[in-house]
Image (cartoon, rainbow, N blue to C red; front, side, top):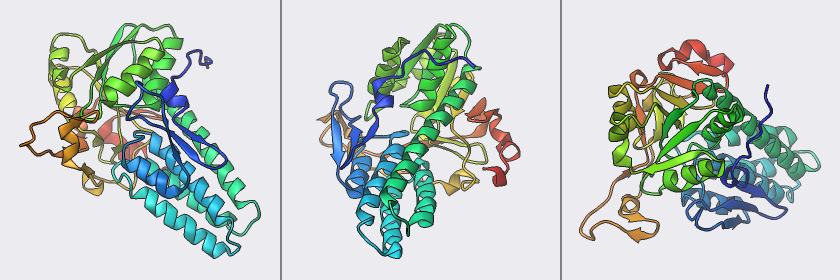
Length: 345
């Protein structure tokens, strides 16, 4: 296996930092115009930061883990292991409620609580939880790297990839793997209203890596494909159901429909499908405050007479998906139940 030569960008390696007394979260609402950290002293402040979009994509996975370390430090002052575990469960439940559609947080919390239950009565409880969380973070980065290796196998030299929103680890690891092999890549990023994650986060991170990067408005996707500027659509997935439906940032469905029409392959990246979500009906689709669509970077861009609507995610059916790229390889969306038996997930 080739060693990675490409340096991963700021937004990925400094996403969430754990200090002795706080969790520092890189504020993606202002990056890259300003590099600022939101400092959280307890799990409640971490939860608020996640809800207020300080971090998104894989960021909440790391932030939630950091929040649980802070709670473990507080719980360690309790000598009663039952009380310790109660505090950890309450903190975990609060963090899970922050973003219901993406299951990154619940995945992190579930594992941390199992570990906490096994170690609640021991000495050095907080240190043990912290080590577990740091190992969990490293495991997640290794998993993203595996997804990137598999996705890179789909990328040809000269590939023109369109992506939507901020895919974080999977996309960056794909680009790094391709770049390490000397492939020439062009990346088109939708701006991704209303927070402009594509224009700010994806575009900046890819350009930091030396990738030829172009930003387009969300409404330009079909025209870009019709003009021959796109040879592949690749996005992350906040969740993939066992039925093969891809749930991702709203606007993904539009791009997938256009890709099907113009015969552009669409690949979605995810660590693995969710065995707790047989169909899209099992996934809550987060609806954020409609006012968020009326503003951009803190400035109102809509008429004061208008109201907004903001479903944060949409659902792309499996017939529009060329393949689902996971840490185990690439699979047909419709074949996920056979490829990922529930007992092995």
